Each structure stands twice: as C-alpha cells, then as structure tokens.
Length: 114
Image 1 (cartoon, rainbow, N blue to C red):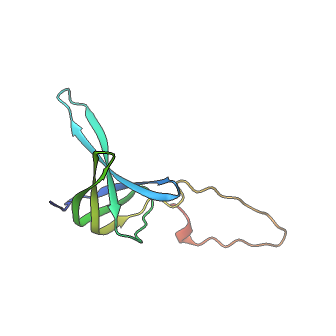
Image 2 (cartoon, helix red, strand yellow):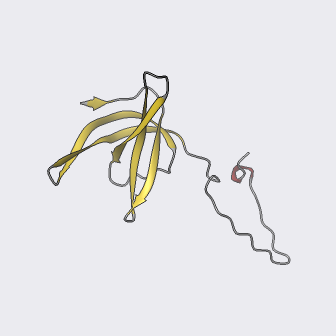
Image 3 (cartoon, helix red, strand yellow):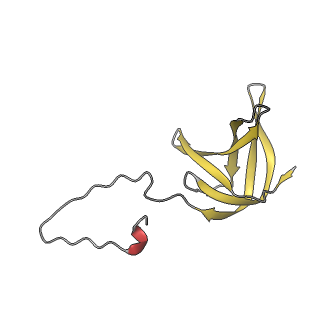
C-alpha cells in the first residue's frame, strides 16, 4: 500500500538507545466531539535525519512492519518527502554567555527568532 499525504505532517523525533526514532501523530473525532490522539512509528531511509517537530509533505511512502516475539509492529516507511519547515531553532536551545572585557559578539539577523 502506497502512502501519499496532501497535507503537512508533523514528525516527532526522540532518542532511543542513542539512535533517533520518529513518529507521526494521528487524531480522530469521537462521537462526543472530543478528539482522540495516537502515534504511529515512522522510518526514513538510512542517513536521513530531521529535527523534532519538523513539518513534511510525504511524496512516497508505504506501510511496512517488523515481526518480533510473535507480534507485528507496523510503521510507515517514508522513502521521499518535501521538508516544509523546521521548528524554531531557539525553542529548546540552552545558551551560555561568557563575558570577556574587549570581546565582541556578532549577532546576525538570521540568528534571532523574531
């Protein structure tokens, strides 16, 4: 089954045993009008690395699975995608400022989050 998305999907990234793991959020409206959320694992080609909360448009993907301990673990294998946007680089950044007399710090406009 081939998967193509006509909308932006947010990809979530976590580190597990020193390796990145990815997922995409799913939601559906319940009868009472509230929403129920879930996640499904996402796998990219080797060498692909994207930041947490990046938005992508899937252009080529398919459903696949791992079989382990007599259980099936489905995931979406994303072969090709367009990167729409990265999260704000300053969102989770910790900064340390060192002040030395006579030391100048240059800040470019593209370094500022606004």
